[in-house]
Length: 268
Image (cartoon, one colour):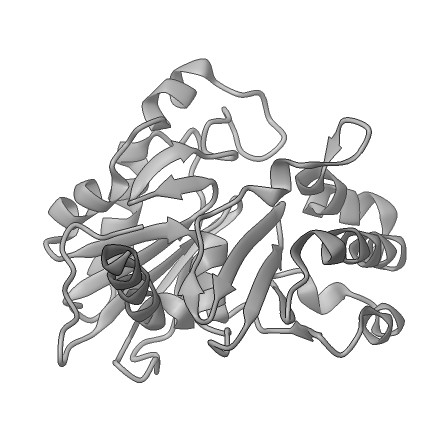
């Protein structure tokens, strides 16, 4: 989970890009995490090979004030800025459409951090989108789990404010062959309605609690606001709903948390 160079500018803006299954949005932030321009959002284009995502990010950046570094969050397993696997971007026309084997090959092993750094002209940090989201909300104390509810389920784990290795909890089975991604994704919410879908969220949280034993769980993403009040109350005091804007705001703090993680690893 590194960028092409470990820069942390004393001044200047950070381009923060949140790449989702249905849309890509971005803004620029100062060192305090304050947006310096309204967020730009465009529909995620499909089919989406790596070079098209790069072109899209560059086009968005051109419509914003000049930054000196970037943070890009995208769905899937990302290690050290390299894509191991990504769920939506390997499909022909977006989430729930057929997977294109050529796109699977195109994405696997793509060094997005280096590619985006070259295209944008400044250092770029590429992480799983839930990790960037979490960077914007975690307190830095204890074990903190972040779950994002949107097209599917995203997750990130932080220990003492340090970003832990990414686990794709979304691909774990929750019922027979149904994964958390399918169980809690937008498609099921639309089919079930918010009330029944909210009860699924509660069952998922109850199921993950003994697995993770978090000190605090943050639930974000575009659909977190759709969880019914009665379910929110039943989730417990250690569960906090956070705004979807964290996916952008976390773009600055992500550099601090990942740098700290690398320093700790280097001391071992």
